[in-house]
Length: 298
Ligand code: KPL
Image 1 (cartoon, protein in one colour):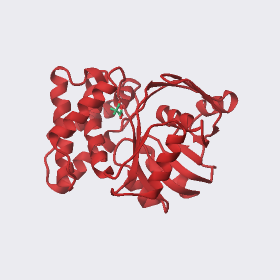
Image 2: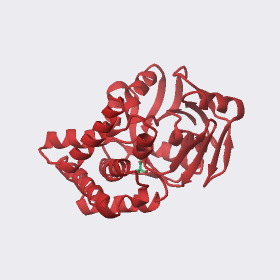
Image 3: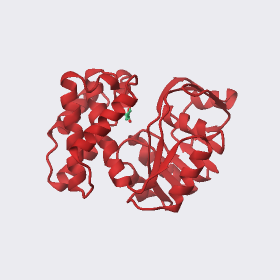
Image 4: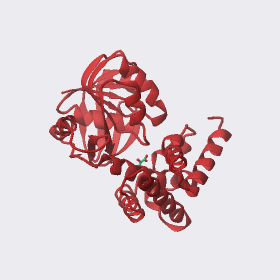
């Protein structure tokens, strides 16, 4: 299968590199990472050891593929959609944080699948990413139910040695992921905690509260996600990624823009639409946005 990975950050490079073991992969990312991959190939170390030679581009000059994976930061989704709209892609699948798929659907003619990837990935240096946790990929139809395209994507991932679940309950899984991100990302970034420490002490109350609120929004949206189920998912991910720092914690430590809008903004926007209260998510969002403003980011 021909696969385009749009957004070769840590996770995009890891997934693209693993896929390149079985498929023809093109990565779209930034220099100097792309330049180094063109010169020496892509090295993945840590929990897997892989050296591959995917194509590496810095722009959207690539024009077609069977599958386009979108792995950019959530706030770059519109730019990714604009680039993908100029080409021909049979299927587009997001592996991003936050509710980005609707933006891709609005901009593209291709079928857009929802996906999640629970791999841990850290950018080591140009041309090299470290796998800090072998997880799984889940793909499925955005609105749930069976989808033959999701089956093909799942089979392509499996062929490359990436354990993949083709799910028929993506609406619930998307909200569960939102609950996990709401529970981990903000508290870990604000208190500078590793994922494993996020549920300890006072940060744990905030994290569990945010996850329960996201589940409340899900139920108001007709998705069956209990508060206890969201907290159980949060505890599972915290245990599985204990040694990692969340993407928002990394962003804050590096003085970068965060995905506050895609995660907390999505929860708050939907809560407002459905008349649900999400005070913890609001407080976390305000504090992260205040930090971004202080840094001159917004
Ligand atoms: O998706 C993540 C992130 O860091 O953005 C989690 C699930 C919290 C894993 O670190």
